[in-house]
Image (cartoon, rainbow, N blue to C red; front, side, top):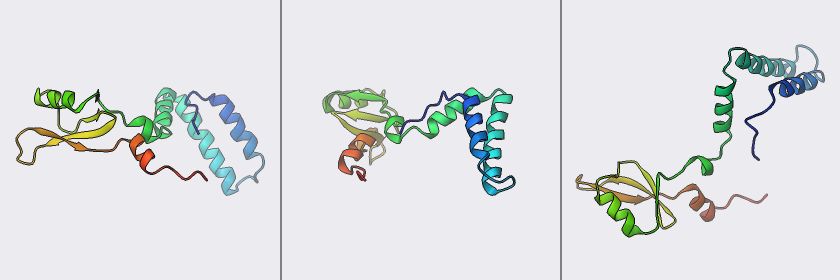
Length: 132
């Protein structure tokens, strides 16, 4: 399920108020709903709503959308030329011919190499989530 980071604050506050009416004043549910409403109101009052929207978006962004290779190469030869050029940096995540790799130091400590590192979409293909 995708979440709308551009939610209407007033609509959310109104829904929280309507839901809160179903609970007895002073109940744990009443307290939780009031805390949520006041927190959202506070974020708006201190003019940090845009920051909160970005936090909200990141919080609900699946890893498959958040992990993005820095470069994509059609072939291993292209990737090998790039790493040999000295432009690669340790820790970079790249995609080579549809597969993920991390740039790591050579075993002898001289230079860099590629280590297979499956990307989220590869992992999803290997281990699909339960369809239940």
